[in-house]
Length: 318
Image 1 (cartoon, rainbow, N blue to C red):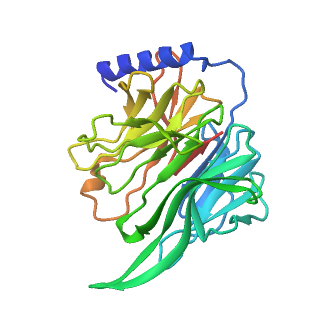
Image 2: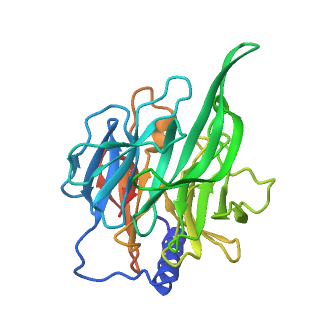
Image 3: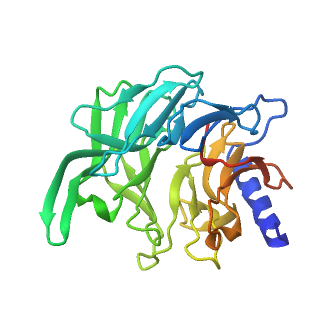
């Protein structure tokens, strides 16, 4: 990491420490879920004691409850829509149960509320396959929905009827604010555009980024800081002369600050560190399979990111 990045990292640490995310010596590490080979794995947040939890080939998008006791994840793929279904299981292992609230056919991108009693997720309903010129197209109502963990009381916060699914997700990676009054979600029409939006539980927009709507830079996987005043996100590289970059965006000013090189960041240890993917730069030219590793950045003055897990994807922290 260069001098500029070190200085930025120091400023980033200072901002979060001031926001109440300081490190406490002697605290036991939390939990970290991640994907490897299409299965969900669980480890300590420092990367130690990794063990396999599921044994499928299409498991993805893990989420851990704040107390670390429960895991939500997505499995499978509905053939015509590409959507999977959400499952819940104990982080200690055991049998998973299907989470499919009444009226929905599938779900993606689950995330727990701060109290762990609710999930926010992207829902799919009313799937239709229509014959159009050039072949068949799939359409459905896509929503950002909230439900209790039993999947009984469900509420669509925002929805987009008659969405062409072949064009990609309309909403992705929703997340609760710490007080549960706001939601952030990723707008993702393609791999080269789509920022994030913050809404209240009435579906009213309160913030969007980038604020210049002619800026098509992607800012993905939004997550609130513990004080609810900033959003952690990342911009994926879209060409070989770019790098994946993690940012912190201030919701009051709209200003962004570079944190580190990497993608798909997640908070761990109650916001005292982040874990993220980092891909080798040769991925753009590699002819064979290339995998990401997971790196951790402590929120402490002078800290530098270090690799904690080889061949890991989609980290989700406690």
